[in-house]
Length: 311
Image (cartoon, rainbow, N blue to C red; front, side, top):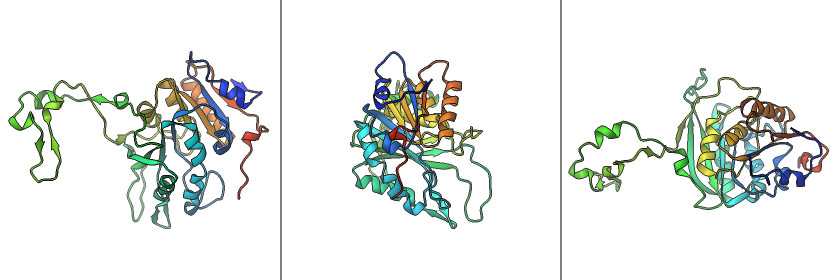
C-alpha cells in the first residue's frame, strides 16, 4: 500500500489498530523523521552505512568523521526509545592504507559520553566468509554487534533466544560426583566455579554472545544485506511482542522481515528511494501474504523528508 497523502498524524495513527502488526517504510533522513514519531520503540536495530573515505555523502562517511557524524543521531535515537529500550549496532571497522581504522570504537566512546551504557559486545561469526587474498590479513569472518541502552538494566527476554541444551547432559549428568552437587571452585584460585547439578532437568540454555550465521547468498539489490537471523535474534531478545522496532538505516528491509516474522511492529527509514522500494518488494514477497499494511511513502515534498543541509 502506497501512502499518497502522508502526514505525521496519519503515521502515528498507523499503530493504533492492535489486530495485526504493521511495517512502515519511510523515505528520508532518520534524524528528521524520528523527531516526529510519537510511538516509543523497544528496540533500534540497524547496520549504519560503513565509513568510506572515497566520497562525501550520506552513504559514505570518511572514517575520521564517522564518530562525529553518528553522534548526530544520538538525540532522536534516545528520545524514540522507551526507558528500558536498546540500541543494537551491527558494524565493522575498515582497513585504511593497510591498517584497521578504529573509528568504530571511537563512535562507541562518543555514544557513551552522551549517556549510553555498553551492555555487551556481540560477535556475528560469518560461517561462510567471502574468499580472497590480502598480503597482511586473512578472510574477514566476523562483525561487531554492539548492544547499547539508556539504562544498565534494559528489557531482555533471555528465554526468547534460548536453545536446546543438547544430548551431552544425558551422559554427563547420569552419575554426579561429590564435586558436582556443590559449587566446585577452580583449583587455580581464579575465583571461577561451577555447580553441575544445576543442569539437571534443564531442557534449554542461553546461547553465547557469538552468533554463528551465514552470509546472505545474494545481495538482493543492496551491497550490504545482513541475514534475517541477525536482527531476528536481537528482536526476540530485546523487544516485547507487538511493540515497535525501528531500523533508521533500513537498506533492503531485512529488519522489517525479521520484525513482522516475530510479531513486532516496525518502522524502516532510508534516504535512498531505490532501497525503500526494494524493501517494500522484499517484504511483500517474503512476508506480505500475511500483512497488508506495508507502506512506502513517496511524497518527497513533505518537510520531514527534506535532506539536512551539510554544515
